[in-house]
Amino acid sequence: MSLRIFNTLTRALQPFSPIEPGHVRMYVCGMTIYDLCHIGHARMMMAFDVVQRWLKSSGFLVTYVRNITDIDDKIIQRALDRGITIRQLTDEMIVAMHTDIDALKIERPTLEPRATDYVPHMLELIGQLEAKGLAYRASNGDVNYSVRKFAGYGKLSGKSVDELRAGERVAVPDGKDDPLDFVLWKASKASEPAQAKWDSVYGSGRPGWHIECSAMSCATLGTTFDIHGGGADLQFPHHENEIAQSEGACGKPLANYWMHNGFVRVDNEKMSKSLGNFFTIREVLERYDAETVRFFIVRTHYRSPLNYGDAHLDDARLALKRLYTALSLVRPVDLVIDWSDPHAARFKAAMDEDFGTPEAVAVLFDLAGVVNRSHSVFAASLLKALGGCLGILQSDADRYLQSGGSLDEQTIVQRIADRAQAKSAKDFALADNIRDELLSHGIVLKDSAQGTTWEAAR
Image (cartoon, rainbow, N blue to C red; front, side, top):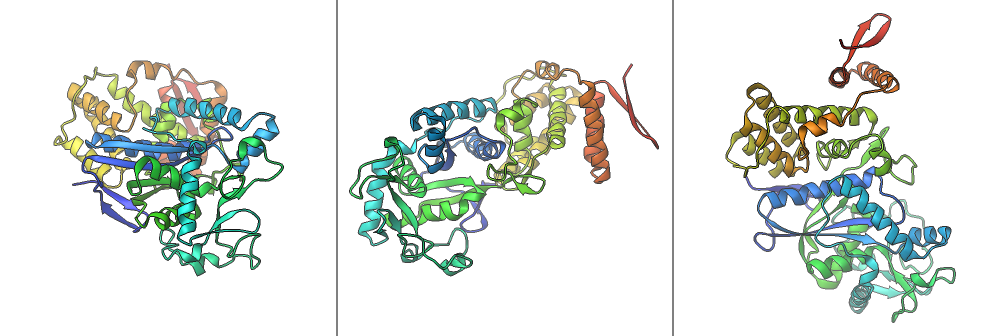
């Protein structure tokens, strides 16, 4: 079976066929660099890390571009608050981002363009839009995009312009002909630092957010490329506006496949900085090893919501330990994967169906079972090789298992409480996993009518 991808644009699974045979060009909207990355950002970058890894495993050459937004209202304000330049702030945050995602074994993209390096490309694109009557100069000095003049607006979100207008305020914002119009070039304000101002035919100003990605993607990958990705929250308005800008200027499709990863949720709410319910990657890595965090994210399908919580991370740690326990029984050897092998073929079929990591991980556990029963070097080697396609199981098994250490009393009591909560929610699989996790650390649980007690195994 050939690779199929769920295309947000068509709302259907489609066979994947790159524009250039054997070569995939993919653009993913990256970080706005004003603070540390949180676990929601890790989820997005991990999703497309798995995509590019599998494309490479499938024999494709991949040119992967993930941009950095290094000019933005929040960036300007954060730099002012800290009393440093915008460049000092963004350089610092880029180093921090790389440190965090490197720890999670998220591979660097082929290209990582910074928005501020592409302002001339943005101005050229704005000029093309103005020449075609799709952009207009507003009375406040901004340059805006005229949404109603682009016939295809709304095709990514699946809504008409009138539907998108539903619920909008009646008053038109300053300088706009229509509330849906969006800014391409923002006129400078006196309060903004000099580093946030560029000279142009439109006067002193800086680019709008949406035009940045249109310019960077087209400059690095061409006017039409294979895959455009990002978080589900970017589908509208950011990606919708990218389509309007790029296709309005060039008259060609921007990307053939649009991919969007699901949200990370905490207590049934989307994790975000605005809600204050986010956890930075660094905070999570203080409590869990990086491979556990990676496995926790990877084993959920990229389009599904990811439920964040200690109990789920603890379950992921135990599950990953089971895989490494199998690899500790024999010493794997390097091998080239034979995709006709039954386990490898099942793994490939899962990944070829829109990067189906849950089913692929199930194959890894089946292989671990084979290793546990037979101590087969081939099965262990295949387990490690297939794990490598997902960026896991590449550490020395004995060293990984020994790094877990023992549990202190506070952690044991908390895990017992987590188990009780799981049983109350009738999540008996999780409750059993917590019991097994504690047993793997030499902790034996005893249930009674009075509750649960524990003791160290003799």
